[in-house]
Image (cartoon, rainbow, N blue to C red; front, top):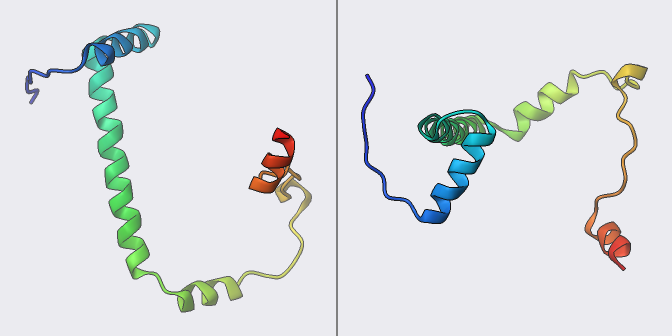
Length: 95
């Protein structure tokens, strides 16, 4: 069942929403409904992760990790070297 609400938002928000909803080829109503859905989903996910984290223990993590074989990954599973992203590397690049 759809419900109708009246909403007061700053003019700057309205202009931005009008622009991005137009770029997405959806109505302002559809765009706002989608944004609300995304926010609610994020909040649900945060609650889920917090609940799972509360059940976690270092002992069970270590037990699960001990079952993983200590071998080199296959070629297709290897992580390619990336550019350093530490703060020190960023400061060096900035200077």
